[in-house]
Length: 134
Image: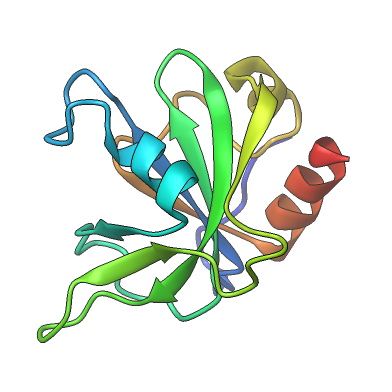
């Protein structure tokens, strides 16, 4: 299954964020802080169209999708962005076992390699991920 994004408007229903605990500036504490505290700041300027409540799936290098959260406050010129939970009953949560890269490829969510920083997800992608979580 291939992603047909060219020449069509992509409706952003979620975002897949890559996280590498060894090479990111956060020294492996960012994901732990998100899961323990319920919120964490993020500074990915490239997620320009993030909005409050946008689902965020966190892909950890060599593991797969390990957690899910929401955008609490989008990043702006004046304020740092906050990722965590608006719906505290539902988010953030850890995914055990992780959704592997092979499974993401088989479902057509990732075509070849995981994104370097992030990848927007379509409504179909989000529905597929929610089905995989059940």
